Image (cartoon, rainbow, N blue to C red; front, side):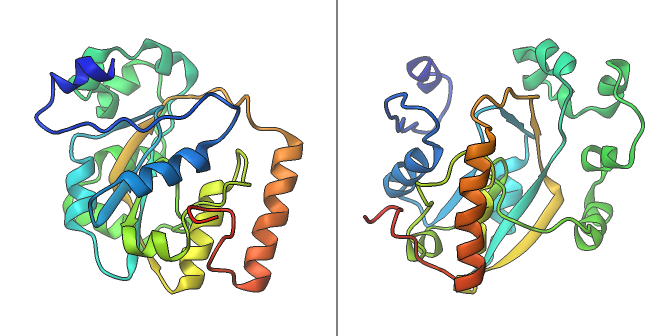
Length: 223
């Protein structure tokens, strides 16, 4: 699939991989960060569909001293399973009328798909949601990421991206909320890695980060 994609796009694709050894997202993210040769890094998840302006919005809004916290519009499982490659290429999954025909109810969150221009900027400014680092839709400067030593590889599913963002905050980086401008659609995922034990372990690490105002992890890129 990677080789096929290389012939379909005009830019180079660098495939960073690891052996399947359970949930090791933080480890592969650190490998990808090191391999990245650009000054600015945009991150999303493999089960997310980015809107066609996704990269552009992140790029034109980047600012020194900030990371960008984007938004998402979660689809229910029945629509996730029904989406085709054509629907993605035509951006049907961002068309609110198409989604309503599939059974999506009328709610305030639909503004994430319909808000444009001043309206999206207004919603970005007033959203009560904490502008945290979200693995499905965030971006930041590589130098800032390297200065906190990347992701903590002890972290399991559930909060690993938030812990990373908390250390960025402790380092002095602020967040820029673009929840209504930089938008992706996560497909309804299976969360097989989410266990009470993993959540409890993550909470202990995050509590230590908050209490100690930690910036550097000793379990990141540099060991």
